[in-house]
Image (cartoon, rainbow, N blue to C red; front, top):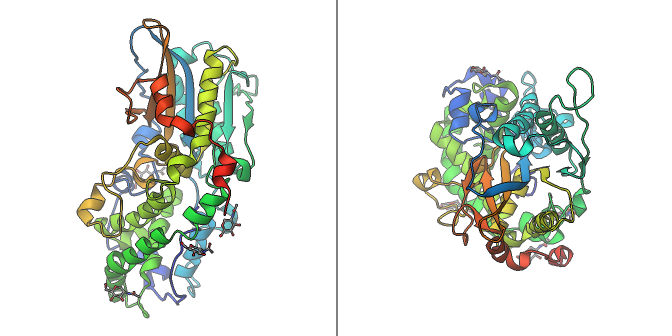
Length: 434
Ligand SMILES: *[C@@H]1O[C@H](CO)[C@@H](O)[C@H](O)[C@H]1NC(C)=O
Ligand SMILES: *[C@@H]1O[C@H](CO)[C@@H](O)[C@H](O)[C@H]1NC(C)=O
Ligand SMILES: *[C@@H]1O[C@H](CO)[C@@H](O)[C@H](O)[C@H]1NC(C)=O
Ligand SMILES: *[C@@H]1O[C@H](CO)[C@@H](O)[C@H](O)[C@H]1NC(C)=O
C-alpha cells in the first residue's frame, strides 16, 4: 500500500550480478531472528506471536472488565503490486533469475499470516480468561468486523477459530461459524478512513510535497552512498539509482516472510544500511499516517465515534455487545493512534536525521505495529465510586498512557474530553475535496 510514494527514478538496466543469482554474494550473514528482533521487518518475533504462555490480566479491586474492543493488524502477507513491479525492474534482463513473487498472489496471507491471528485468538482467551468464561458466540454479543480485503477477512476468521476453538458443531475440530461484517472500502470511515477520504487521498497520500521533498533529500543524501558502494562493488553501470534501494529492502523482507531466507537481498546490506533503508519507509508512514501531517490527528474520528457509541449503548442497556473484534491494517492503527494523540516521536522525523537519531525512532509502522499487532481497549466499571467507568489501552498487551489521562486506567469522561469534537465528527464534510 505504498503506491503513492512518488519515486523519482529513471528507468535503467540493472545489470547486477546479484540479480542473476542473489545467493552468490553473501556479503553479510544474518539469522532470521536477528533481523526480526531488530525491528527491521513487519514480522513479530515468534516468541510473542506464537506464545501460549500468557498471563491472565489483573485489574483494580472492585472493578469489572465489561467490554473489549480490539483492532488487529492482519497477519503476515506477500508483497503489494508496487513492490512486485519494482522487483521486475531490479531483475530486468536476467533470464535465469526468476522473481518468485507473482502479481496474482499480491497482498495474500502467507501460512504464518494465517497462524498469527489464530494465535491472537488463543491468546485473547488466555489473557481475558475470566471475561470469556462461559461466553457463547452470538453475533449480537460478539461482533467481528474487517475491512473489505481478503487478508483482513481471512485474519478475522482465523482469530475466531482461536477464540471459539472447539465450541461449534462443525466437523472434527468443532469450528464455530461467525459473521464478519465489512463496509465497502470507499465508505469505510471506520477501518479504512484513509481510502474513504478524498481529502486524505489528494493531499496527504498524493501530492504530499513535504514528504516528496524529504524522500528526495534522503535518497540523494543518505541512500546515495549505499547505492555507490553497491555500484562499485558489483560493477553496476550506470550507477544504481538510490531510489531503488528501498525496494531491495522490501525484497529482502519478503524473502524472509515467504521463504525464511536471509541469504538473498538481505545479505547485500550491512546492519546499519538495513536500518537506514527502513527509515525511508519510516518517513513515508510518518508523513502519510502520523504526525507528519496534522490532518491525521482527525482522520480516525469515525472509529472513535463508533467506539464511544458502542461503549455507551452497552452501559446504558441499549445493546448486548460485550466484544467488538476488528481486523484492519497497519495504516489504520497508525491513524487511530495519531488521532488519539499517542505515540508521538520526540522530534518530527526528517531526512536530516543522523544514524544515532534513526536508531531511536520508536513509533513508526516498522517499529511498533508488526503484522497481527493487537490494539485493545478495555472498558471497566467499578463499584466503589458511583459506578465509575474506566478505559485502558494496550498495544500488543502493553498498556500505554493516553496523554491527558491520570493513569493507564483512564476515566471514561476524561477520555471523551480528550477526544473532544472528534466524537461525532462529520466525516463526509471533513473529507470533501477540494
Ligand atoms: C486518489 O488519488 C489518485 C491520484 O491522485 C486518483 O487517481 C484516485 O482516483 C484517488 N482515489 C480516490 C478514492 O479519491
Ligand atoms: C499539488 O499541490 C500544489 C500545492 O501544494 C498545487 O499547486 C497543485 O495544484 C497540486 N496538484 C494536484 C495534482 O493536485
Ligand atoms: C544531490 O545533492 C548534492 C549535494 O548535496 C547536490 O549537489 C545535487 O545537486 C543533488 N542532486 C540533485 C539532482 O538535486
Ligand atoms: C527458519 O530458519 C531457521 C534457521 O535459519 C529455523 O531455525 C526456523 O525453524 C525456520 N522457520 C521456519 C518457519 O521454517
